[in-house]
Image (cartoon, rainbow, N blue to C red; front, side):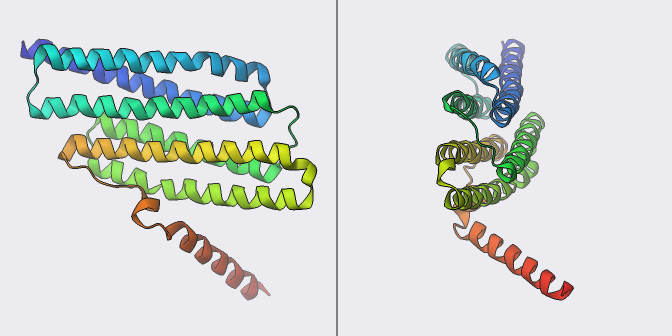
Length: 245
């Protein structure tokens, strides 16, 4: 009975890991599609979103069957619950990626905001690094790594604020850019939300290891942290410019 349970648990973990890998690829495709304004590829991404939803439903069924039929002890029960909770966050990340593709389809004509495009590319790269590192931390039950990864969400939040400021500046210069600017703002907000869901995943990695629910989102722990970080960076930049003069 125990060997059979372990095999089923490994299968469940494998399903979860594959779901995470698929979602990471979905983020990349959605972001690239928006930056390139590729409506054809965007349609494929929206159509394929049902795959992630189906994966989550199938995983949930496997997990609940495992609990019902095997009645696992506390430690194993916690592992299964973590997979259930974490898969819900992966599904939400997939939904956000699909929403980015949908925004590409809604845009009639994209007026490029080059500086914002550059930051979106960096956000996407950082988000995928965070997600894939989190999956690795889950696989190796690395609580300390999960906590460190969660701190990277501060970088995502700073990218979001930078994008928002650039978008507002573009609107002030040219009101004709408002439709495109609104789409850009939605996309960077969705990427920022993906970062938050990855932090949730890190929290489940910690819970799986320690049995403790721990808040890891730096913006929630210290609400003024991002504002203070940006002020510090701005001051350092100003001081550097004054020194050069």
